[in-house]
Length: 341
Image (tube, rainbow, N blue to C red; front, side):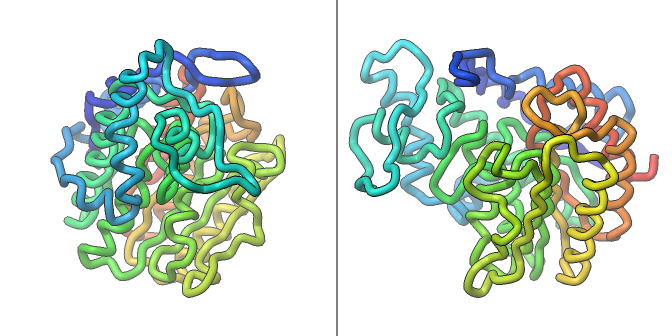
């Protein structure tokens, strides 16, 4: 299995995250991708290759053009005002307020942000764009008949049609799914195994019947992103019945989690998917610092094999996972389990 990876992820190197009322070192940082990269090389999973550049077209198929323009310009606008810190949103168009986009950068940050923890920094756009190209290059590999791993950073599954947050700016899995649709795959499934709900991916495909979405995650009553991810969210319009959420409580065991995965994979099979994308977050690990599930390292091997049993063209797109010491091990365990190694 090829791993697609870009050194440009390092351009996204934020120094601050709002967490617990303090500005702390971000949980999402460059060493995450480096640990995974090194583990892929250590076990000999397969070649590690740099991505091609597919341009802006595939990105604009799933994201609002004004939002993408904002991502490209945000840091320059922030610097123009003379602000010294990293850019964090401070206000939002909340309930009963106007939803007009402001011209001032402080207002634009709030207009496009879905959460306040993620600071916008110099290099963020370049890294996010490269991450999308990693996903697209891996997608092209799957379209050619191989399985592939997109070692994306920054991650993407919280990025909605026109919102960023949760460390995500462009939705790599969604960009890949649409690229598959545009290149011959009639029915594409996305299964999000990250601890946090893939609210951005749900937002993008919620009214569509050609892209199935399932997410296994911490109950949004207790876990970020809080405002999507309930079991009664099953799609709308033509998408009714093609969105499935599996919210689970604190302390969820692997046995319970695996049963939810089995149900989701059964639904993928019933959907008659032509290909599957796994939004691969390994923050379900028992010692992850911002999660509350109890999976152990061998469990990742097991569920990799469960995914392989579908016998579908498979793309793995890296999402979250914040136990830095084990993130490489757990990520590659999924991939080796999938390959039966």
